[in-house]
Length: 613
Ligand code: GCU
Image (cartoon, rainbow, N blue to C red; front, side, top):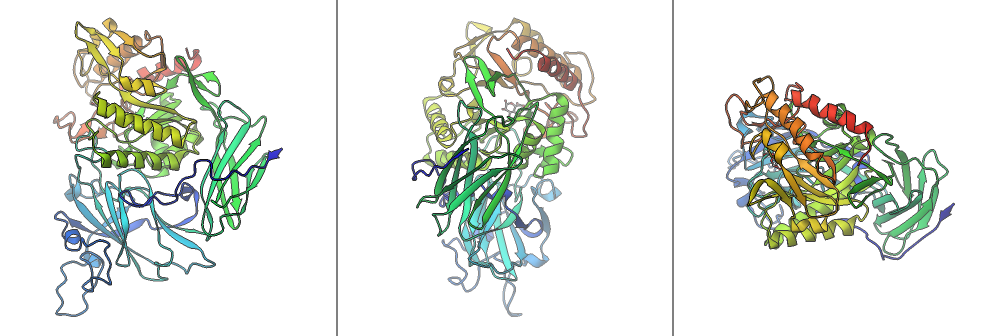
């Protein structure tokens, strides 16, 4: 039975393109649209002094206004006498997607600008079709030029962005030039200091998306809070024909719904579907959902579940659950570079499943969209995070706007992924009034965009000045989150593992406790006794003693130990042991499972069979 609903613009709808500092925000429906890939080999010019930028910073940049053409804007010499000091056609190449650091020894540590150039043809747009350039991400700032005209700028290294290019694309010989700059900046998000490699470049897919004149720009379908059979879809159109009949259907079921969008192009469709299989890690049921609006038709594979907390418990589909997690950086350790593909996602998440996980923490920034889609399929709950990491500039309005834009773009992109159950707004941020105010704003932003998921952050732990074994979790930010999450490194940064049995905890909130990080470095193949730093035995012993300690915390409901795989970090130089890698992985870059892998795997196997509380 379907109920037809059409509300005016009384509910959330997402602006199709947020222009300005952070460039255009991406329509949520673009990842699942068929598109022309612009991936492949791009010519590139390394520009450490930004010669190609500062010579022509007049904004808005326009080739007509600069008859001499822009520097690095894909020009060929017109006459033998002409002075031109660059030529993309004869410049080196880089593969897109992919960071530049892992593709070229001379760019391994490079922080600066690289200009990318890709030529492409484009069949004429028919019947009012619209064209968009869609970037999965570029780290950290991207300035995009098409056929000599600047389209705009995007800031933020891990979120998608799009520029409409309808009418600006020729049928042949289009020139797409992108300046990517990855220089770390104090007021940026993240700021200048992180414990991961500053991979720069066009790190994810670049696509040319074609849509009807009026298309479905965003579409969200979720169980209504507190129900197991009542659904609500929110749909937004973009284009001239805002009032259209829209339909929704779930393949393999009798469920259909329809509505007519209002003058604002928005519609809410509500329907009941008794007996629909709910998504869970044990049974990751997914349904092909098709929505249509006029000539536009989209299909996405969606799962349905509820997630909530009640006192100390986390409830998945109303049942208490223990989060058997692991933290993951977006890096393919075998390639030693940014992960970006479905194959990379299957490698990393396949290892998490082998470990016995039902949960992964995608640290410390939005990962590529393949991760949540593959997690939907494999049955892994997901914590996604924005890089509000360590010492952010809490008093800078531009920094807050940047963080909010990254959070908005992450939620807009992944809010239909059943696997995503936690939005995290920060990691290890020193307690202060400006910091808690900044984070509170992010919580309000997240809840406004998506009231259906849990909110958290890796918060601070403090030590009782009178007793080094007494750890206190009373971070004021804990008042605003659903999970009380924190990182703790007792036995690695704080004493030795034998300290762990003596530790006692004071938890100031009646909320589920989630340990978002614990761990120790171990060089795979390095052996010694359990007090030999960087040995596999030390790491394994710390895991055993940490898990025993955590079991004493009454509200403990999950963990994502640090970390699935060793990962590159410029902060880890110890020769012969680290060599530029953080070695806290349970798996080495060559795939070796360290001894601690089996310790956690055994704990999770037993946990899977035990009650959640
Ligand atoms: C911190 C931080 C991680 C870092 C880890 C470490 O908790 O959140 O990003 O890599 O500690 O020191 O290994």
